[in-house]
Image (cartoon, rainbow, N blue to C red; front, top):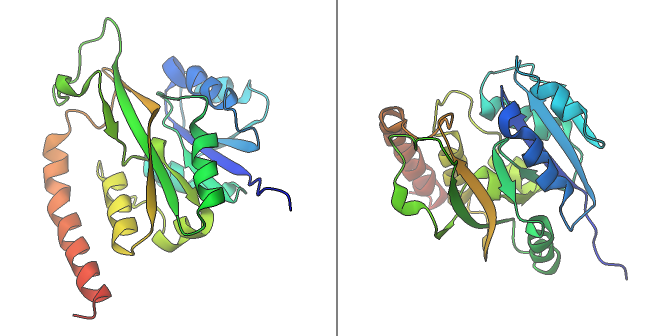
Length: 233
C-alpha cells in the first residue's frame, strides 16, 4: 500500500507586503514536501505585492473580495484551495525547509491528530526599532507557536472549527485556537523551530495591547460558555 501523499494548500494573505513577500514564497518553494499548492490572497495592495506573487510559478494570486483584514483573506484563500491539508503563512514569516514534511509525517502516522503546530523563533529585523509592545526577551529562544503560520490542519478539522472571525481587530487567531481547543480537536506539537517570525515596524499585532484587552474578555466568556455547553451544564 502506498503512503498517504496529501495535497497541502498553503494560504498567504498579503496587503502591501512587497518588502518580505518574495522571501516568504521562496521558503514555501524550498519545502522538502513538494505536493502543495500556493494561494496568495491580495488585499488591494498598492506596492506590487500581487505582481510579486504572480511572478512565481505554481502560485495562484486572487484578489480579496469580501471582508477586509487578514482573517477574511485567510477564509477566502482556504475556500479557494483544494488540499486535504491546510497551512497558513504570514507574508513576512519564514518556514524551515522541513516544516511541512515534519507535520505531514505526524498526520500520516497518527490519524487521531487533527492539527499540528511547531515552535517559533522571533527574529528582529536589522536596523529597525522593535515595536513598543514586543518583549525583547522573546528573541533568541524557541516558543510553542499557537499561531496560524505554524499550523497544518486537516481540512475537515478546520471546517469543524469554522472560519476565522472577521469582526475582531486583533484576536482573530486567538479566538480560532480557543474554539479548536474547546471542541476539542486533538493537536500535536513538533518540538522543533520550524517557523521564524519577523519583528519589525510594520507588524500588526505588536503594540496592540489596548485592542487586545478590549477583545479578550469576550473571547474568554465565549470559551467558558462553549466548555459548559460541551459538558451539558
